Length: 68
Image (cartoon, rainbow, N blue to C red; front, side):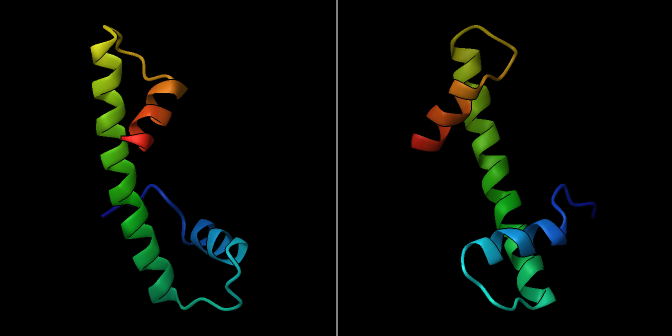
């Protein structure tokens, strides 16, 4: 399975959150969870764009999807 997010990116996010050390398994788990959240957010954003009779997802669709 090809992932959209890199493990290096996961490490950066976790370190930005305050983690000192992160195992490879933790980075992989974090990536899986974020990809699931991202897919769900994307599906919601698509619905907001379609409701506005657009095919293009805009930043406002992403923000609305995040709030709902």
